[in-house]
Length: 450
Image (cartoon, rainbow, N blue to C red; front, side):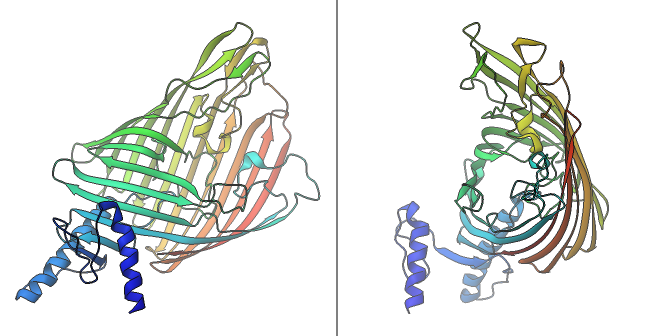
C-alpha cells in the first residue's frame, strides 16, 4: 500500500507540468486529459477479440507507438545514450516521456608517463618528467548520466522531440557536480537549444573507454539554432546552424578580449548508403569571425576562421566497420578536441608585434571495429593525431606542435543493460622546440543502463 502511494506521488510530479492531478487507478487526468499508462518498451501487440482484449490491445498499441517513436528518434554514435527501459505514454500516443541513464565506473592506471587530466588528452601530457607524474591511479564515476526525453505527436507540428541530459563533470576533477550536456527541442527539421555541434559527425568515431576519445575528433556542445533535412529517399542529408562561438586565443599587450558578435556557422552535406543507411560519407565546413580589441589603435578588429572536414563510417561487412575523420583549417581550436581551450585559435605574430594571426591546424583519425558477436563482443583500435603549423614562425618554443593518440579496446556486453570493457592508450606530445613526452594508460570500465 505504501509503495503504491509513493508511485502515485512520483507520477504526480512527472505530470504536474500539465497542471493535472493523478488518480490512483489508471493514472487518469481530469477533463480532456488522456489516460496515462506506464508501459515497457518490450511489449508486443495483441489481437482484440472481446472488450477486455480491446482494452489490452489499445494499451499495447500505445506501447507499440511509443516504442516506435523512441526508436525512430534514437540518435546513435559517440557518447550517445540508449533508449530508456520504461516510457510513460498517453493511450492516444500524443505524448510519451522516457527517463533513463546509466552508471559508469572507470578505473585507470597511468604508467611510464601520466596525463595531467582525468581524460587521456595528449595536449595535457607533462613535458618534464618528475617523480609526481610518472604514475597515477584513478577511479571515476563522473560520466554517469541521467536523461529525459519527451516525444509529442502534434497535429500541426508533426513529431516534436524534447531532450535533456546531464552528467557529473561540472566542477573540478572528481567533484561530481552536475553538468548540463544537452537541452533542446527538435521539430520540423529545426533544433533549438544546447546540443553537440553541427560540425561533429557522431557516427565517425568508435566507442572508447576514454571519455574524451580520439584527439582529432570534435565532440563539443554549443547553444544553437540548426536546420537539417533529408532528401532523395534519405540518401542525402543537409544541415546548417548558427552556434554560440567559443574563442580561445593568446593575447599580448596590444590586444584585449571582447564579447563576440557573430555566431559560428557550421554546415554539412552527407550521403548514406546500405539497406539501413549504415554507411555514410560527410563533408563539413565551419566559418567564424573572432572579435578582439586592438589597444594600440583603440579600435575593435576581427579575424576570420574557417575549417573543412571529411568524415564517415564504412560498414565493409556485417562484422567489420571503419571510422574516420580529417579536418583542416585556421583558428578552429574548439573543433579539434586536443586543442580546445589551448589558446591557439590565434597568437601574436612573432614577426610583427602590432599584428595577431590565426594558426593553421589539422587533425585526422582512423579506427576499425571487429564484431565477433553482434551487440555482445567486439574489439576496436585506431590512431589519431592533431597538429598546429607554424605561421610567420611560432609564438613560443613551448607552444604545442603535435599530439598523437593510439588506442585498443575490447567490449563485452553480457546483458542488454550491462557493459564491461578494457582499454590500452598510448599518447605523445611534441612542442615547437621538438621536445617530446609520452604517456600510457590502462583502463577498465563497467556500465549499467537503466
